Amino acid sequence: MNTAYYKIAGLTICLEGNAPELKELDGFAPFRTEEVDNVIATIHLHSTMEEFDFDSAEWIFTSGVGGVGYQFGRHAGGFCYRSNYNTESLKMWYESDKREIWCNAERTTTYQPYELRFMLWVAYSLAALPYNAVAVHTSVIMNGGKAYMFLGESGTGKSTHTRLWRQHIEGSELLNDDSPILRIEGDEAVVYGSPWSGKTPCYKPLRLPLGGITRLSQAPYNKMRRLGTLEAMGALLPSCPPNFAYDDSLTDGMCAIISSVIATIPVFHLECLPDKQAAQLSFAKLTGNDK
Image 1 (cartoon, one colour):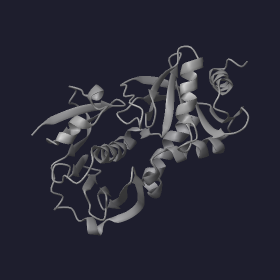
Image 2 (image 1 turned 120 degrees about the vertical axis):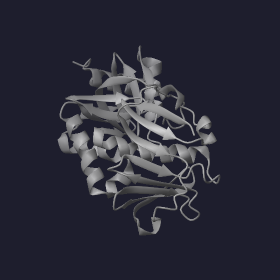
Image 3 (image 1 turned 60 degrees about the vertical axis):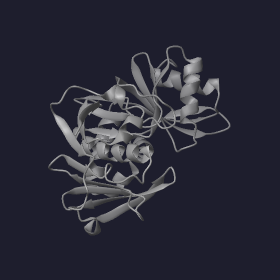
C-alpha cells in the first residue's frame, strides 16, 4: 500500500492507498511533500465502507457537479459524503476527532477522476477549516507581491477579468482560477494556490498576502465602490463551500475566517464591462493607485 503526503495551504494531508486514478488527477504533483509531521488528516482510499452506517446519516445538502449528483451529511462523529447517491459510486466518512477520512475509491470503478478530485476537495475542506483555512470560489491574480481575489457567480466573468489584468496590468500572473485556499495566519490573511483550479490548469504551491477582494457583476459601465462590513460578509460568504452553510459548526468556522479577513482587507463591488478600463479601475482601487 502506498502512502503519499501533500502540503496544501501549509497543511499536510496523507493519502493512503493505491488508487490508479490519482495519477490522472492533474495538479496534485506540485503539492507532494516529504514532510510527514503534523498531518491534519489521513484519507484512506481503500475502505469497503461496510462499517459505516450511511442510513443513519442526516443528509443536509444535495447538489451536483459536472452532471454528477452528490449529497453531504453529518453523523454523530463528523461528516459524510456520497456521489451519484442513487448508486453510491463514491462514499466518504469523516471522523472529526480522529482526523481520519475513509472512502471507497479503490473498491468501486463506477466514477470518473473528476469525481474523486471533488471528493478530495470536500475532505480537505473539512480537515482544514479548524486551522482557519477555507476554499473560496474565486479567480486570483498576483501582482506586486500580493494576491487579489475576484468573486462572483459562475459566468459572471471572474476568469475574464483576471485575464484582462494579465493582458493590461504589467506584472500580473494567475495564482488559481477556481478554488484557492484563504487562510488566517496570526493577524494576516493569506492566499494559497491549490490542486483545484477548475477548467484552467493553474496549480501553484505559492503563498501570498491578500491585498484585496472584489465581487463582480456585469454592467454596461464600469463602477467600483468599497463595501461596508455587513456587505463584505455577504459578498464573501456565498463563495465559500455551499454545503458547509447547512451546518452551524461549519458556518461558524467560515464566518470566523471571513470576519478576520474583512477586519483588515478591503472588499469592493465592481460593476463592469469585460474591457481594459475595468481592469485598470480595479487595479487602481485595490492597490491605492487611484489616490
